Length: 231
Image (tube, rainbow, N blue to C red):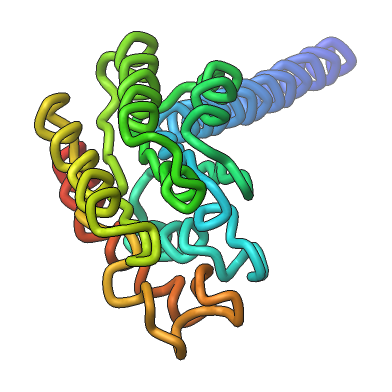
């Protein structure tokens, strides 16, 4: 009889131990599943800001961390906003080249699109009508593929050496397109930087590290309201 009781005791002890182990395993598996789901949701919530431009966006002559898109990302991270900046700047890019390249870049989801092109058109004296047409084509492409995406147009100007008439015609491209398409406008990307010797590199065209911080602020003034509105 004692042997039977002893065996039963061992049997029930084993059942209890098995139940505890199963419970712990289930709890652990549920925890892992919950954590995985949380990460998936977190990744889903991160939105993309695509900055599409030329050497100004690419950060010509600067370390990657010094370019204005990186300065903007640091500010976004400090505010714990769920946005990731994609720097799609290419040195030497014109609006024509950008229009040809854009389809490939738009393969990844875009929530906010910042268009920074036209400066090289102006320096090359490309017809204003051509620059306007290409900028409009790029805006159309973004709207067609991502109807919900917010768009910001970065205004540019040309140096006086390009002639007064050309300069005036070039300058109005951006506000007119912004109004026509109901998109955000940075009046002049290089405001407070263009022409300032101490804020530019030796070529007098590309901002240095200090200049890039001011450019980032120029962009931020238009971008920031879009970020908070979406929260």
